[in-house]
Length: 279
Image 1 (spheres, one colour):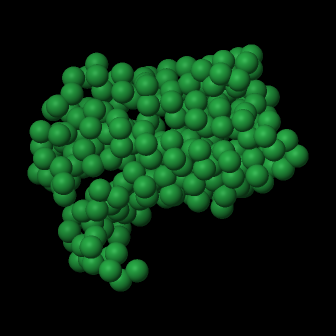
Image 2 (spheres, helix red, strand yellow; image 1 turned 90 degrees about the vertical axis):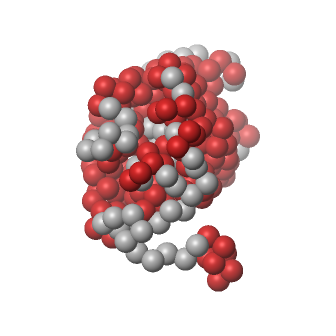
């Protein structure tokens, strides 16, 4: 069975300085001012448009690069995955950087849920209603992104027939999503959110290779990939178990970070320049 690359995804799903600031008590973080926060600087309409557009482009990158890879290297699945994962890593990092100041560049329902959960007491994150609106925008964008990729490569938009089921694949999704969510929250707790875009891309790229599922890690992207019967496609019957595994992974990721970093600045972490010096 050909390998598949993510999303998040989901990357993605996670992710930039402005939305991560919302998860920090007081709303302040390194390099980010309160006026840069998406919830105060951008209207809901703009944020939803950014989420839909970003998720559409993310899925277009995943599906489109998968189609291109299968045509360029038809007899080498490993090379196909390398091409697909490289495009996904680069595209995800760019989208996080470009759209973060508008919406937070969640591009991933589990990231939006985590934002709501962590900010529900002090009102610093999304409201539950906004989570629903973000999720609709993300899923709509994901479907449109798959259609766009199909159109670019003259591929008909049909329901995918590739089954992605099995216990090992579900474990892989739990691991990939837990790592994604855990990474975001760790960056928040240790005040290193300026590294979000490259590190999220790096995690997704690594998870494409070391997880059996090749790291979907994003419910919206999982839904979008149903609509392309190509390298990155997934049969509808496989989507629900994968999404359930992703939700479980998000819970594991949050729990792990709360255990390791019970409060912001609870652990002494070297500043970024000190880390670079010691590498």
